[in-house]
Image (cartoon, rainbow, N blue to C red; front, side, top):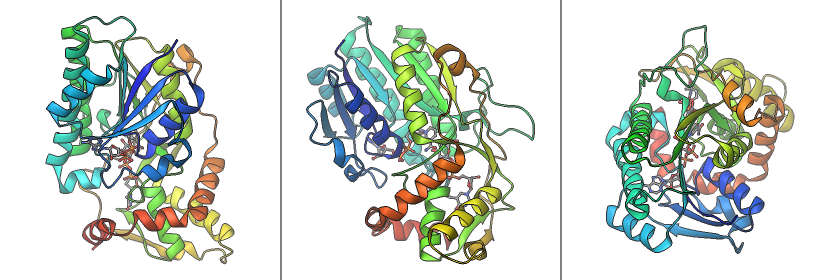
Length: 349
Ligand code: NAD
Ligand code: DAU
Protein backbone atom coordinates (compact mmCIF):
# COMPACT_ATOMS: atom_id res chain seq x y z
CA UNK A 1 0.00 0.00 0.00
CA UNK A 2 1.31 3.45 -0.90
CA UNK A 3 2.10 5.91 1.87
CA UNK A 4 3.17 9.51 2.14
CA UNK A 5 5.81 9.63 4.86
CA UNK A 6 7.21 12.90 6.18
CA UNK A 7 10.59 12.27 7.80
CA UNK A 8 11.96 15.15 9.89
CA UNK A 9 15.72 15.54 10.40
CA UNK A 10 16.47 13.40 7.35
CA UNK A 11 19.65 15.31 6.53
CA UNK A 12 21.21 14.38 9.89
CA UNK A 13 23.12 11.28 10.89
CA UNK A 14 20.41 8.71 11.69
CA UNK A 15 17.77 10.43 9.54
CA UNK A 16 19.87 10.07 6.40
CA UNK A 17 20.16 6.31 6.95
CA UNK A 18 16.40 6.05 7.57
CA UNK A 19 15.64 8.06 4.39
CA UNK A 20 18.01 5.88 2.33
CA UNK A 21 16.43 2.68 3.67
CA UNK A 22 12.86 3.82 2.99
CA UNK A 23 13.56 5.35 -0.43
CA UNK A 24 15.37 2.21 -1.63
CA UNK A 25 12.98 -0.32 -0.07
CA UNK A 26 9.60 1.31 -0.81
CA UNK A 27 9.44 2.69 -4.36
CA UNK A 28 5.65 3.15 -3.95
CA UNK A 29 5.97 5.43 -0.92
CA UNK A 30 6.41 9.17 -1.26
CA UNK A 31 9.19 10.13 1.12
CA UNK A 32 9.50 13.79 2.11
CA UNK A 33 12.57 14.89 4.02
CA UNK A 34 11.86 17.99 6.13
CA UNK A 35 15.05 19.46 7.57
CA UNK A 36 16.25 22.93 8.50
CA UNK A 37 19.89 22.10 7.66
CA UNK A 38 21.41 23.21 10.95
CA UNK A 39 25.14 22.62 11.48
CA UNK A 40 24.27 18.91 11.89
CA UNK A 41 22.23 18.55 8.71
CA UNK A 42 23.93 18.05 5.39
CA UNK A 43 22.44 17.17 2.00
CA UNK A 44 25.76 15.56 1.05
CA UNK A 45 24.56 12.71 3.31
CA UNK A 46 21.86 11.91 0.74
CA UNK A 47 23.61 12.40 -2.60
CA UNK A 48 22.88 8.82 -3.69
CA UNK A 49 19.09 9.16 -3.34
CA UNK A 50 18.47 12.83 -4.16
CA UNK A 51 17.25 12.13 -7.71
CA UNK A 52 14.97 9.20 -6.90
CA UNK A 53 11.32 9.65 -7.98
CA UNK A 54 9.93 8.75 -4.58
CA UNK A 55 12.04 11.31 -2.65
CA UNK A 56 11.75 15.06 -2.07
CA UNK A 57 13.58 17.48 0.21
CA UNK A 58 11.89 20.46 1.84
CA UNK A 59 13.91 22.94 3.86
CA UNK A 60 12.03 24.18 6.90
CA UNK A 61 11.99 24.68 10.64
CA UNK A 62 9.78 22.41 12.76
CA UNK A 63 9.30 25.23 15.29
CA UNK A 64 7.71 27.55 12.70
CA UNK A 65 3.97 27.07 13.39
CA UNK A 66 2.60 28.80 10.29
CA UNK A 67 5.02 27.06 7.94
CA UNK A 68 4.36 23.61 9.45
CA UNK A 69 0.55 24.03 9.48
CA UNK A 70 0.58 25.09 5.80
CA UNK A 71 2.99 22.31 4.86
CA UNK A 72 0.81 19.67 6.50
CA UNK A 73 -2.37 21.03 4.86
CA UNK A 74 -0.75 21.07 1.40
CA UNK A 75 1.22 17.81 1.58
CA UNK A 76 -1.23 15.79 3.75
CA UNK A 77 1.29 13.20 5.02
CA UNK A 78 -0.34 10.09 6.49
CA UNK A 79 2.73 9.23 8.55
CA UNK A 80 5.48 11.14 10.30
CA UNK A 81 8.84 9.77 11.39
CA UNK A 82 10.19 12.51 13.65
CA UNK A 83 13.95 12.59 14.09
CA UNK A 84 14.72 16.34 13.87
CA UNK A 85 16.34 17.47 17.09
CA UNK A 86 19.27 19.16 18.69
CA UNK A 87 21.16 15.99 19.62
CA UNK A 88 24.49 16.77 21.29
CA UNK A 89 24.61 16.69 25.11
CA UNK A 90 27.58 19.08 25.40
CA UNK A 91 25.83 21.69 23.26
CA UNK A 92 22.74 21.34 25.48
CA UNK A 93 24.87 22.19 28.52
CA UNK A 94 26.14 25.31 26.76
CA UNK A 95 22.74 26.36 25.32
CA UNK A 96 19.71 24.64 26.93
CA UNK A 97 17.11 27.00 25.42
CA UNK A 98 17.86 25.90 21.86
CA UNK A 99 17.11 22.32 22.98
CA UNK A 100 13.80 23.29 24.61
CA UNK A 101 12.83 25.19 21.47
CA UNK A 102 13.61 22.49 18.88
CA UNK A 103 13.06 19.30 20.85
CA UNK A 104 10.01 20.28 22.91
CA UNK A 105 8.28 23.09 20.99
CA UNK A 106 9.19 21.61 17.59
CA UNK A 107 7.63 18.27 18.55
CA UNK A 108 4.44 19.94 19.83
CA UNK A 109 4.15 22.00 16.62
CA UNK A 110 4.33 18.78 14.56
CA UNK A 111 1.85 16.93 16.82
CA UNK A 112 -0.59 19.81 16.62
CA UNK A 113 -0.35 20.14 12.84
CA UNK A 114 -0.91 16.37 12.48
CA UNK A 115 -3.95 16.55 14.79
CA UNK A 116 -5.37 19.58 12.93
CA UNK A 117 -4.85 17.90 9.57
CA UNK A 118 -6.65 14.65 10.30
CA UNK A 119 -9.24 15.87 12.88
CA UNK A 120 -9.25 12.50 14.61
CA UNK A 121 -9.75 10.64 11.32
CA UNK A 122 -6.90 8.38 12.40
CA UNK A 123 -7.28 5.34 10.15
CA UNK A 124 -3.86 4.28 8.69
CA UNK A 125 -2.11 7.28 10.26
CA UNK A 126 0.98 7.22 12.46
CA UNK A 127 3.20 9.66 14.33
CA UNK A 128 6.51 7.86 15.03
CA UNK A 129 8.68 9.72 17.54
CA UNK A 130 12.37 8.75 17.61
CA UNK A 131 13.81 9.19 21.09
CA UNK A 132 16.75 8.21 23.23
CA UNK A 133 17.66 5.96 26.15
CA UNK A 134 19.01 9.05 27.95
CA UNK A 135 15.46 9.87 29.13
CA UNK A 136 15.84 7.07 31.70
CA UNK A 137 18.82 8.76 33.38
CA UNK A 138 21.83 6.83 34.58
CA UNK A 139 22.26 3.20 35.65
CA UNK A 140 24.60 1.99 38.37
CA UNK A 141 26.80 -1.01 37.66
CA UNK A 142 23.78 -3.38 37.49
CA UNK A 143 20.51 -3.52 35.57
CA UNK A 144 19.16 -2.49 32.17
CA UNK A 145 16.65 0.10 30.94
CA UNK A 146 13.30 -1.52 30.12
CA UNK A 147 10.29 0.25 28.58
CA UNK A 148 8.71 0.72 32.03
CA UNK A 149 11.81 2.28 33.64
CA UNK A 150 10.85 5.68 35.11
CA UNK A 151 12.10 8.76 33.35
CA UNK A 152 14.92 10.55 35.18
CA UNK A 153 16.77 12.74 32.64
CA UNK A 154 19.94 14.49 33.82
CA UNK A 155 21.01 16.83 30.99
CA UNK A 156 19.11 19.61 29.23
CA UNK A 157 19.23 17.39 26.10
CA UNK A 158 17.70 14.35 27.80
CA UNK A 159 15.19 16.51 29.70
CA UNK A 160 14.04 18.03 26.40
CA UNK A 161 13.72 14.58 24.78
CA UNK A 162 11.85 13.25 27.85
CA UNK A 163 9.46 16.18 27.65
CA UNK A 164 8.86 15.56 23.94
CA UNK A 165 8.12 11.88 24.67
CA UNK A 166 5.56 12.96 27.29
CA UNK A 167 3.86 15.29 24.82
CA UNK A 168 3.60 12.52 22.23
CA UNK A 169 2.03 10.22 24.80
CA UNK A 170 -0.29 13.01 25.97
CA UNK A 171 -1.54 13.63 22.41
CA UNK A 172 -2.20 9.89 22.19
CA UNK A 173 -4.24 9.92 25.40
CA UNK A 174 -6.03 13.21 24.80
CA UNK A 175 -6.72 13.17 21.05
CA UNK A 176 -6.27 9.44 20.29
CA UNK A 177 -3.39 10.43 18.00
CA UNK A 178 -1.81 7.13 16.90
CA UNK A 179 1.82 7.14 17.90
CA UNK A 180 4.77 4.92 18.57
CA UNK A 181 7.97 5.92 20.42
CA UNK A 182 11.36 4.23 20.33
CA UNK A 183 14.20 4.90 22.76
CA UNK A 184 17.58 3.91 21.39
CA UNK A 185 21.10 3.68 22.77
CA UNK A 186 24.26 5.32 21.32
CA UNK A 187 24.56 5.03 17.53
CA UNK A 188 27.75 5.09 15.50
CA UNK A 189 28.54 4.72 11.80
CA UNK A 190 29.02 6.71 8.57
CA UNK A 191 27.81 10.34 8.36
CA UNK A 192 27.90 11.01 12.11
CA UNK A 193 28.90 14.59 12.86
CA UNK A 194 32.39 14.70 14.44
CA UNK A 195 31.23 16.19 17.74
CA UNK A 196 30.16 12.76 19.07
CA UNK A 197 32.78 10.48 20.62
CA UNK A 198 33.60 8.04 17.80
CA UNK A 199 33.78 10.37 14.76
CA UNK A 200 35.44 13.12 16.82
CA UNK A 201 38.18 10.73 17.90
CA UNK A 202 38.58 9.25 14.39
CA UNK A 203 39.06 12.76 13.03
CA UNK A 204 41.52 13.67 15.79
CA UNK A 205 43.52 10.46 15.28
CA UNK A 206 43.78 11.19 11.54
CA UNK A 207 45.09 14.65 12.41
CA UNK A 208 47.15 13.42 15.39
CA UNK A 209 45.34 15.79 17.74
CA UNK A 210 44.66 15.04 21.47
CA UNK A 211 41.80 12.63 22.27
CA UNK A 212 39.86 14.43 25.04
CA UNK A 213 38.51 11.71 27.39
CA UNK A 214 36.09 13.14 29.99
CA UNK A 215 36.80 12.37 33.66
CA UNK A 216 38.35 8.95 34.31
CA UNK A 217 36.96 7.42 31.10
CA UNK A 218 35.01 4.78 33.05
CA UNK A 219 31.60 5.81 31.71
CA UNK A 220 29.67 3.11 29.90
CA UNK A 221 27.57 3.33 26.75
CA UNK A 222 25.70 0.65 24.77
CA UNK A 223 26.72 1.04 21.11
CA UNK A 224 24.57 0.20 18.08
CA UNK A 225 25.53 0.40 14.40
CA UNK A 226 23.32 3.04 12.79
CA UNK A 227 21.95 0.74 10.05
CA UNK A 228 20.62 -1.59 12.73
CA UNK A 229 18.78 1.39 14.25
CA UNK A 230 17.36 2.32 10.83
CA UNK A 231 16.16 -1.29 10.35
CA UNK A 232 14.55 -1.26 13.81
CA UNK A 233 12.75 1.99 12.93
CA UNK A 234 11.50 0.47 9.67
CA UNK A 235 10.15 -2.60 11.55
CA UNK A 236 8.48 -0.55 14.27
CA UNK A 237 6.99 1.81 11.67
CA UNK A 238 5.26 -1.09 9.90
CA UNK A 239 4.60 -3.59 12.67
CA UNK A 240 4.93 -1.82 16.03
CA UNK A 241 1.87 -1.66 18.27
CA UNK A 242 0.28 1.79 18.37
CA UNK A 243 0.53 3.78 21.63
CA UNK A 244 3.57 1.76 22.70
CA UNK A 245 7.26 2.30 23.32
CA UNK A 246 10.11 0.11 22.09
CA UNK A 247 13.65 0.14 23.47
CA UNK A 248 16.42 -0.41 20.91
CA UNK A 249 20.00 -1.25 21.91
CA UNK A 250 23.09 -3.12 20.91
CA UNK A 251 23.56 -5.50 23.88
CA UNK A 252 27.03 -4.01 23.51
CA UNK A 253 28.35 -2.13 26.54
CA UNK A 254 31.76 -0.49 26.39
CA UNK A 255 33.66 1.62 28.89
CA UNK A 256 34.70 4.79 27.05
CA UNK A 257 38.39 4.21 27.67
CA UNK A 258 38.27 0.59 26.41
CA UNK A 259 36.44 1.73 23.28
CA UNK A 260 38.97 4.50 22.68
CA UNK A 261 41.85 2.03 23.06
CA UNK A 262 40.23 -0.35 20.54
CA UNK A 263 39.70 2.56 18.14
CA UNK A 264 43.36 3.59 18.52
CA UNK A 265 44.54 0.03 17.79
CA UNK A 266 42.35 -0.33 14.69
CA UNK A 267 43.39 3.08 13.38
CA UNK A 268 47.11 2.43 13.89
CA UNK A 269 46.74 -0.66 11.68
CA UNK A 270 44.66 1.09 9.01
CA UNK A 271 46.94 4.13 8.92
CA UNK A 272 50.13 2.04 8.97
CA UNK A 273 51.26 3.70 12.18
CA UNK A 274 53.32 1.86 14.77
CA UNK A 275 51.37 0.11 17.58
CA UNK A 276 50.68 2.51 20.47
CA UNK A 277 51.01 5.61 18.31
CA UNK A 278 47.40 6.81 18.62
CA UNK A 279 47.05 5.83 22.30
CA UNK A 280 49.65 8.46 23.12
CA UNK A 281 47.07 11.06 22.05
CA UNK A 282 44.67 10.10 24.89
CA UNK A 283 44.27 13.12 27.22
CA UNK A 284 42.05 13.03 30.30
CA UNK A 285 40.17 16.30 30.68
CA UNK A 286 37.57 17.84 33.03
CA UNK A 287 34.42 15.76 33.24
CA UNK A 288 31.13 16.65 31.54
CA UNK A 289 28.77 18.20 34.16
CA UNK A 290 25.99 15.76 35.17
CA UNK A 291 27.75 13.00 33.20
CA UNK A 292 25.60 9.83 33.24
CA UNK A 293 27.65 6.85 34.40
CA UNK A 294 26.05 4.06 32.42
CA UNK A 295 23.39 3.40 29.78
CA UNK A 296 22.34 -0.12 28.80
CA UNK A 297 19.20 -1.17 26.99
CA UNK A 298 17.12 -4.30 27.38
CA UNK A 299 15.88 -4.79 23.79
CA UNK A 300 13.89 -7.96 24.56
CA UNK A 301 10.50 -6.47 23.67
CA UNK A 302 11.41 -5.52 20.09
CA UNK A 303 13.19 -8.83 19.70
CA UNK A 304 10.23 -10.94 20.85
CA UNK A 305 7.47 -8.90 19.18
CA UNK A 306 9.14 -7.90 15.91
CA UNK A 307 12.09 -10.28 15.58
CA UNK A 308 14.66 -7.47 15.54
CA UNK A 309 18.18 -7.92 16.85
CA UNK A 310 21.46 -6.17 16.03
CA UNK A 311 23.08 -7.66 12.93
CA UNK A 312 26.50 -5.96 12.93
CA UNK A 313 29.16 -6.86 15.52
CA UNK A 314 30.94 -3.95 17.17
CA UNK A 315 34.35 -4.89 15.76
CA UNK A 316 32.93 -5.00 12.18
CA UNK A 317 30.84 -1.89 12.65
CA UNK A 318 33.76 0.07 14.04
CA UNK A 319 36.05 -1.13 11.29
CA UNK A 320 33.47 -0.16 8.57
CA UNK A 321 33.02 3.20 10.24
CA UNK A 322 36.75 3.97 10.31
CA UNK A 323 37.06 2.87 6.66
CA UNK A 324 34.18 5.17 5.71
CA UNK A 325 35.75 8.21 7.41
CA UNK A 326 39.15 7.46 5.87
CA UNK A 327 37.52 7.28 2.41
CA UNK A 328 35.49 10.45 2.97
CA UNK A 329 38.05 12.90 4.24
CA UNK A 330 36.49 15.48 1.89
CA UNK A 331 33.18 15.13 3.82
CA UNK A 332 35.05 15.40 7.12
CA UNK A 333 36.88 18.46 5.88
CA UNK A 334 33.65 20.18 4.75
CA UNK A 335 31.82 19.61 8.04
CA UNK A 336 34.77 20.56 10.23
CA UNK A 337 35.44 23.96 8.69
CA UNK A 338 33.60 27.20 9.61
CA UNK A 339 31.48 27.04 12.78
CA UNK A 340 32.93 23.72 13.87
CA UNK A 341 36.21 25.44 14.69
CA UNK A 342 34.45 27.85 17.08
CA UNK A 343 32.55 24.99 18.72
CA UNK A 344 35.76 22.97 19.11
CA UNK A 345 37.72 25.87 20.58
CA UNK A 346 34.99 26.64 23.15
CA UNK A 347 34.32 23.01 24.12
CA UNK A 348 37.93 21.88 24.45
CA UNK A 349 39.70 25.23 25.08
P1 NAD B 1 21.73 14.90 14.18
O1 NAD B 1 22.08 16.03 15.09
O2 NAD B 1 22.78 14.24 13.38
O3 NAD B 1 20.61 15.38 13.15
C1 NAD B 1 19.54 16.19 13.53
C2 NAD B 1 18.87 16.72 12.25
O4 NAD B 1 17.75 17.54 12.65
C3 NAD B 1 19.79 17.61 11.41
O5 NAD B 1 19.71 17.26 10.05
C4 NAD B 1 19.24 19.02 11.63
O6 NAD B 1 19.45 19.87 10.52
C5 NAD B 1 17.77 18.74 11.88
N1 NAD B 1 17.13 19.80 12.66
C6 NAD B 1 17.56 20.32 13.83
N2 NAD B 1 16.74 21.31 14.22
C7 NAD B 1 15.74 21.39 13.29
C8 NAD B 1 14.60 22.20 13.15
N3 NAD B 1 14.30 23.16 14.05
N4 NAD B 1 13.80 22.01 12.08
C9 NAD B 1 14.09 21.05 11.16
N5 NAD B 1 15.18 20.26 11.24
C10 NAD B 1 15.99 20.43 12.30
O7 NAD B 1 20.96 13.86 15.10
P2 NAD B 1 21.00 12.26 15.09
O8 NAD B 1 22.13 11.81 15.90
O9 NAD B 1 20.82 11.78 13.71
O10 NAD B 1 19.67 11.95 15.93
C11 NAD B 1 18.40 11.91 15.28
C12 NAD B 1 17.33 11.64 16.31
O11 NAD B 1 17.60 10.40 16.97
C13 NAD B 1 17.26 12.70 17.41
O12 NAD B 1 15.91 12.91 17.72
C14 NAD B 1 17.99 12.07 18.58
O13 NAD B 1 17.49 12.55 19.81
C15 NAD B 1 17.67 10.60 18.39
N6 NAD B 1 18.69 9.64 18.88
C16 NAD B 1 20.02 9.78 18.55
C17 NAD B 1 20.93 8.83 18.99
C18 NAD B 1 22.40 8.92 18.63
O14 NAD B 1 23.20 8.15 19.16
N7 NAD B 1 22.82 9.81 17.76
C19 NAD B 1 20.52 7.75 19.77
C20 NAD B 1 19.16 7.67 20.11
C21 NAD B 1 18.24 8.60 19.65
O1 DAU C 1 22.35 7.27 24.36
C1 DAU C 1 21.87 7.87 23.21
C2 DAU C 1 22.50 9.23 23.04
O2 DAU C 1 23.86 9.00 22.69
C3 DAU C 1 21.81 10.10 22.00
O3 DAU C 1 20.51 10.38 22.43
C4 DAU C 1 22.58 11.40 21.79
O4 DAU C 1 21.99 12.15 20.75
C5 DAU C 1 24.00 11.07 21.42
O5 DAU C 1 24.75 12.26 21.32
C6 DAU C 1 24.64 10.14 22.47
O6 DAU C 1 24.87 10.84 23.71
P1 DAU C 1 26.23 10.65 24.55
O7 DAU C 1 26.41 11.83 25.40
O8 DAU C 1 26.30 9.31 25.19
O9 DAU C 1 27.29 10.64 23.30
P2 DAU C 1 28.71 11.33 23.10
O10 DAU C 1 29.27 10.77 21.84
O11 DAU C 1 28.65 12.80 23.25
O12 DAU C 1 29.55 10.75 24.32
C7 DAU C 1 29.72 9.35 24.49
C8 DAU C 1 30.56 9.15 25.75
O13 DAU C 1 31.89 9.65 25.50
C9 DAU C 1 30.05 9.92 26.95
O14 DAU C 1 30.28 9.16 28.14
C10 DAU C 1 30.90 11.19 26.98
C11 DAU C 1 32.24 10.69 26.43
N1 DAU C 1 33.00 11.73 25.68
C12 DAU C 1 32.38 12.38 24.67
C13 DAU C 1 33.05 13.36 23.94
C14 DAU C 1 32.35 14.10 22.83
C15 DAU C 1 34.33 11.98 25.99
O15 DAU C 1 34.91 11.35 26.90
N2 DAU C 1 34.99 12.94 25.28
C16 DAU C 1 34.40 13.66 24.28
O16 DAU C 1 35.05 14.54 23.70
